[in-house]
Length: 171
Image (cartoon, rainbow, N blue to C red; front, side):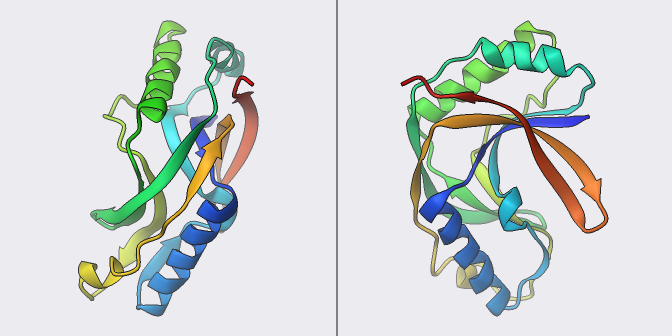
């Protein structure tokens, strides 16, 4: 199974991202736009891993208080375009605890430095200037009350993400 830990987008933040995707389409961006149901913020990418019980055990070791995330800018990594999430102590603390729990349970994960972003378009084709795309940046904030364990499967029309577990914020 291909697994990752993520925050699913909700409410006005999701709507703001969807509006940005539509705006980018109208400006001539072509590519594989991430569907609404797949919009998320990856906290830890595990990749191919077959022991689901070990991952859920690691997740059960984590507790967190509800915190807010906020959209902050946009950009690209080569042909992948994204919306940024503002750095915050609660977000980075949560990511550190999640990754530490994975390591303590012997679960391999991508150890790249955490750069909070939401992928919007993959394999992007755009002949215009990036500053044109950045004129109307998305705004939005949402409270994080749940972190999901997601499975990623390749479907005939792209990736299909399925939530297979979660941890909820303490009240």
